[in-house]
Image 1 (cartoon, rainbow, N blue to C red):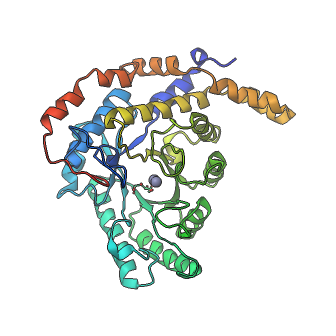
Image 2: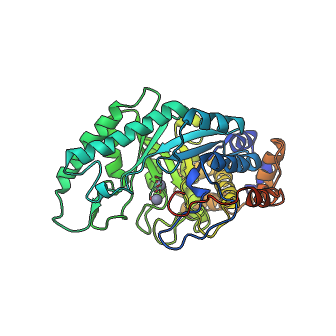
Image 3: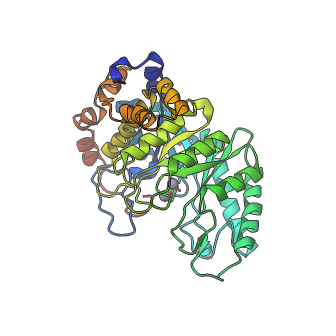
Length: 392
Ligand code: AOS
Ligand code: ZN
Ligand code: ZN
């Protein structure tokens, strides 16, 4: 029987070292095309977003980076923003481009038939690369919202050729220490084709580009029933899993708190990460959240998300790998499954509480933050100026 109390030192070390990157857009009033419910005290600018990110890191000890989104996080001086982050003990992570909020992109951005529109989209990524240079970021994350709604609307192959050319131009602008992370999504905002609908299409373009390109797996971007852990194993095996965009879904790209809808799936995903030795930083997988919270309190929602990823990781780390391998080799079907389920059914919260205490952190970051009074403080200080809507 696996128990968290018997967790080996290397398990504790891995848990203590784990980091999860937070999305800046999870902290503002945003998250839906319907009513955006406003929350008192939400950030009024990227500097205040980073202050809230620092709270998540302060209590979890596992969230030292924040993804920015251009243009949602426009500032005059990105070096000052990075210095502000550093002063608060965090750093700027991936820079996310935005190709889904401009009229020009109605019929496509990097795939558009008009080279002038493609150039505009390419130049936007060159602007993002300038931000990377100012903030020290190394990951440029590209989610392509391009697609079509009707058969015959455009040439499917032609769009792939145009996309390949556009990506090559962006890739050529990268610095040697940069990566281009290409995200896929099987539907929405278009419903007949998406130009990067699946992990295979993203992988094909990444392979054509080179070693600095990798795939982003957003857990909300698959058809219901997709075996996501198979995709994880395949991309890790090829060294082409660049990042996760973790969230939960009940129906589609719901962007809910990761692990809340299907904690068993999150465990199976982290099991493939652990069994393929892809948890450590050298493996190059950036564990990012991509969530938009509309009714959930923002900072507690991020703390809960980080804790959910930590719990799934801890369960994956305590799997009895030797017993599992023996059962697999001997064809003991139920025995092998039982080894995995034994770990999944283990309460790892005591183990995580010990690891946090050993780091000088509160054993329950969620409770500790809620008792801190920070939410009341920012509600009193941040009066007025909040924006509502996507990415505020
Ligand atoms: C959109 O659905 C993708 O998940 C994006 O990665 C994310 O929503 C955000 O817009 C960052 O660009
Ligand atoms: Zn995403
Ligand atoms: Zn998404």
